[in-house]
Amino acid sequence: MKQAGIIRKGILGGSFNPVHIGHLILARDALEAFALDAVVLMPCAVPAHKPPEQLAPAEDRAAMLDAALADDPQLEWSRLELDRPGTSYTVDTLHALRAAEPGIVWHFIIGADTLPELASWRRIEELLEWCRFVTMRRPGMPGPADLRASIRLPAPWPDRLLADCFAGHLIDVSSSEIRERVAQNRSIRHLVPATVETYIRQHRLY
View (cartoon, rainbow, N blue to C red):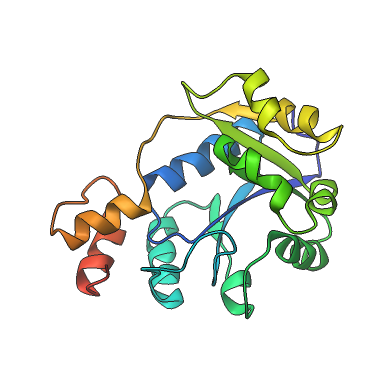
């Protein structure tokens, strides 16, 4: 149950190359599961854990987010990482957000497939202290025991991370698939918002 007077926001990071319905449904699932006031989609300038191949220009990805979120007041996006030079690290983003909005309780949204990677994140234990990680577990994914074994972090973090898992919709859509379909001149209708599809076609992306 939400406490009165406390503002709770989620952060969903990614390259959003392009933003698609899977991103939007994940944000909505987390918003409802944790009674968040809003979810902020955070596009990165230079991904820390992915090669920047086929990365659309930052302003195009920003414009697609604008188009995708225009009619949903609970979904926002931020230029914070796009405007910060260099590789995007989550700990730097959280530090800036906490300084700018000290009254917000932040929830960082990840998929269960990211749990094994957390141990390699920069200053991860500091980051875990600063915000609550909430993990979307899709139907058919490994159970708690298998997930626990994959979390290479000291106690109490495995238990805390697993306590904040939530069930999300099974939406098998990826940005890479969308880019491939565009390159092959195949339809991406219903995989991205109609406004994003229009932008991709008009600007000849991918």
